[in-house]
Image (cartoon, rainbow, N blue to C red; front, side, top):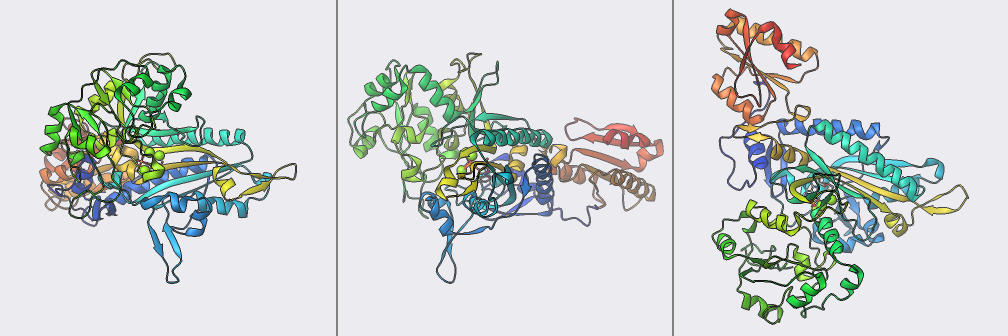
Length: 576
Ligand code: ATP
Ligand code: MG
Ligand code: MG
Ligand code: MG
């Protein structure tokens, strides 16, 4: 590829609404352009990286025995009504009507459609196991689309669904996917952790998230440096709480009724000393109308924090709390929820809140307000998500860091991550709801045992950049770089010798399958270097007349501090 024929358009500054580094760098490098909130166009440079991610995923899914298919983006309401999710999904599912007034949705996920396919296609146990996957556009009308491609509304997901005869066989399918995911993320060149995740209503221990380690991640991971223990914060919190309780079930039964919970109740419930000092309170909603006033469903997030933090919020210094948040005094909150001073968790506590040190840590909005997903469709307003600032990360650390690891090996530590993949054992949840059966060996119909497995293809780009960048730009892992090598000829327009040598090198690289680009724009070295460092190409070779006279070229790896002079004949070997 020649740079003059490619579309390159870099920006000195990112648009002012870009919040995180990956989003800024992708915009500046000319990989994406925002079309609407959470909806992006992928420019040729961005699409090259996406295609590389997709290829790795496809190869490993195929190797693991999964089969690619494609399911419709526009899906009929009837299928979603069969599982009850037409009502349950709430506003995150974008709905539309056709000209006959029939209801449809843009797929946020595809359990319903794939289960419908299975009940028509898979009639006998002899056809099992099967694993179908697609790499496809998803639409989720996220409450707060943000961070560029990391939390888009339209995004690309690889979603796979396994069908098995028995729970045991489904466990094997799960293990195969788990191993495939490890290969995928290894090949992508990312530092990641597979962490145990909450299985919610389904139960069991068969759910793992794959989290790319990055300080800017929205999720918190709890792990033991001395063992394999790793869980997401929600699960780790629950385990940690249960570990402190001799009889967790009874404790939950005793959970105070809405509006009646006192600090004492909670302290007693948790079996920890009560020493709570309420210093300041922030009352928050993240649902706002066009004017920025709180509207619609409101999430009340009660934070018990120091005055310092409250002042920071008021001064607008915590960007996570920008839109739609308003502030109230303790008295206002108490009045709103109709409780006495000293009350904790004003509208009741369906889940216990942990009391630590000298203050209350209500790190989950639904812990404190008792709202659960079903009632509010309330998704993802956990502490980490809304408050990603480093200062607040320290607060999360207080929650459980230093507790003994549940496996008894070492003490818990916390780091932040970005959820890039999720594997989940579903059991017969969907097959029962949709009466999807096959005939087993004994001639009787049986419900499929299912699993689902997602990877956020476009989110991976953002995650890779959050993990790998510096002051000059992106540093791509070679496997997903839009180009692996750039050749920068100095004096392209003037020197035949430079042109010849650059072309020779380009041809040699291309012949060995290296994805190279030749910068024939005849720009000054400084301009070329700044562009390619911003774009993040892993290897750069510079060729100029002066060097050629001595038979040398310059090589600089994207992480290298300075260029190395190499005999021209050795350059190729250096890059390969
Ligand atoms: P999150 O907790 O970040 O909202 P999720 O748990 O809702 O993600 P899943 O339903 O598990 O997401 O979907 C599988 C994968 O799709 C996720 O692991 C993530 O990588 C990706 N994904 C989910 N939502 C988005 C989004 N809004 N933008 C980009 N990728 C997404
Ligand atoms: Mg989500
Ligand atoms: Mg999640
Ligand atoms: Mg998930």
